[in-house]
Length: 74
Image: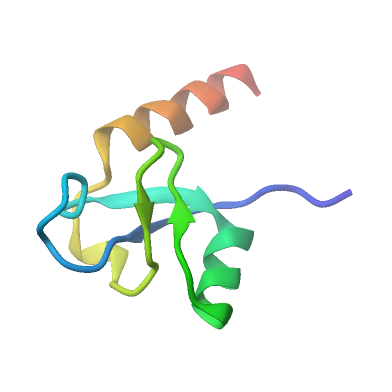
């Protein structure tokens, strides 16, 4: 059985709402988009291309809240 890993990633550019945050998304989607190109959908619903270093940005508050809720539910 494969477990779903969640990793923070960020968006490209700084003109759209959500671009100034690191977002959480499924690890498998981030890897796929990094190799094949394309966009990933964050837990909060924001779509982005995983092209920037997520450690340079604060975590999206909505993504952070959703991860905390998922951890509480087990």
